[in-house]
Length: 425
Image (tube, rainbow, N blue to C red):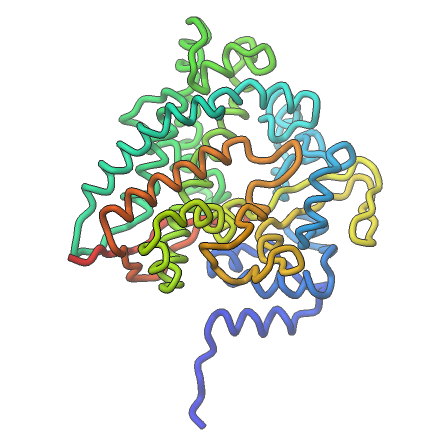
């Protein structure tokens, strides 16, 4: 019998089920860049859903992999902290020489705060995500999406991430911040540099840090300008004028929220637009179903977000002993709530490993989190995704993926750097 070549997915599954559980490293970025994370989490859900990793580059940590356990953990914000004082929302360990003031709650974003400070700062920017604001933004998003799509080449390969996903979301970010429109692409670029982590060489890392600092520095005069004027409706103005976030002239006290809003305002929409196109190409019957009935976008949009799950996990730190799934997480220990695993948990989501655009309960997913930290911009993200797909379906019966995606080098945000596509003539 001729030898068969094992696919990446088959190889990953074999490795995941052959590796002793106490040697699991589910955070390995290679699992995410190769899209081979799924069997590792499948095995944990089946055999050890509250799993302890004793040794990793992030130190010891717990993994929650079931939907129900993650919902319970998100609801226990009093004992499971998001605060930067306790380590914040990622597993990353900062360099030993990081100044202590960087961990201060005065130098962080509201996602890395606990109540009541979290609630007050989140409330400062909430008006921009209200129903009236979204209704005002939708025609602008539609107009821009139409223009971007009309300019796409036909009959030749191009990068969907660059020409559609980044362009649309960078325009939206520039509008939300009232940031110089001609410099809009600095914003998603900053997000990618931040989330991809340290560069591979000291020289490249120095350049990365310089470019990130340069982008952040552009917000200083914008903040000072907005703070000096009457309150406006953009994010910088809302932050600059609210007592909970205005920072009293110290840039270090507002940069955390700027960084959060750049990342959150870019990544869910950008990576779900790309991930949706990839998923539809991988499931041609679903693509045909959507072409035949664009009204399915009501359920298709949350299904795309569930399937892509742009935020892979969030961290919490126990400030008291907490029992989850029969295991005790001790005070001071950290845990990762793996949303990517919860979104494939068949105990909670029927046929969770299938991409189904007309799913009966499409919003039963973990991609936006739960509790007080549930994604503030989820309705804006869904609206942008719906509008861009409505406009795509008006113009193009199909956009073909013609090569393998290049994925973001991150285990925190599950996204894309490149996706080669072609629109048939």
